[in-house]
Amino acid sequence: MPAIAADVRILIDLEPVAADALDTHFRTTVDWYPHQYVPWSQGRDYDGPLGGEPWDPSQRRLNAAARDGLLHNLLAEENLPSYHRVIGDMLSLDGPWGGWVNRWTVEEARHGTAIRDYLVVTRSADPVLLEDTRAAHVQHGYEIDHRGDLIASLVYVTLQELGTRVSYQGIRRLCDEPVCEALMRRIAHDENRHMLFYRTILQACVRMHPDRTLQAVATVLRTFRPPAHAAPGFGRLISSMARSGILSPEIYHRDIALPFLRMLGALDTTGLAPAGQRAQEEIAAHLEESADRAGRYRALAERLGRLATA
Image 1 (cartoon, rainbow, N blue to C red):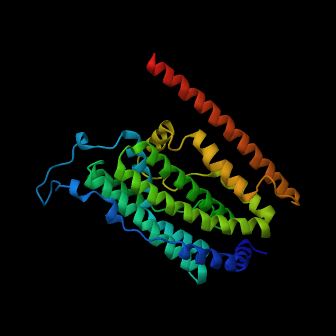
Image 2: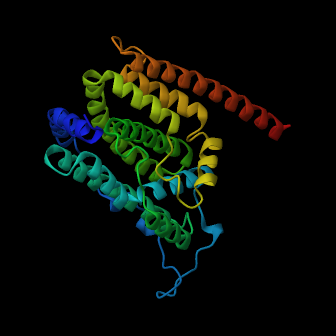
């Protein structure tokens, strides 16, 4: 059966699971409003048509680690038009799949709105640079790396939602600012609920198509890159997040890779064909490499910390 026809069949088989997961999502939804998480009383006019005060780096209040984390996540959030298109193409815009894609877009749009407003009102980031990088990133567009492979795409979005939740939790720990902490807690809660929807779908995939799902997991773990990988300044921001512990190799291993593989039972699935068994071996090898990389990064960070205080 051609891959496209097979994926259509999988979507049809998964539709009852998606319908139940969407019902659960709506039943547990608590709407919130970005304007309530922005300290508007701290704002003042900028230069330009209003003749206000130009932005200056000395006006920034957030520490550098939290600011870089927010800038990276805002860049990712603001390419929402491309993500809506990609996920709509992947799942379809009919039935419960379309209901999910549209609801997900509603909720994700709040994140970018709230973060941008927070940064601009508190003068925690250069507003001109924010707009220039947003424009460049949206103009570049986005295409998921696994187009044409439905299950691999589902693996990717599940892993991405989990990683995004972890990154917002990391920013909350570091920001040392009550309003930012509240906003990060709110957004992390959304990202967790998005991950739960996809987790439900992916767990059904493991039950229905264990060999193909484990092959997809092995492929995505080997090739994963964040959706903002093409954004201006991505390399510097992701390096900063690693150094600060928002998204370091240690955090990836402990809080993303391990929980993700456990929730799928990826290393415990039995009755696999040879292709599935090979994928399981690849997944186990990735986990070992991840643990080794985390240990080496932690040792390096500790050594650099000792040198800095010597």
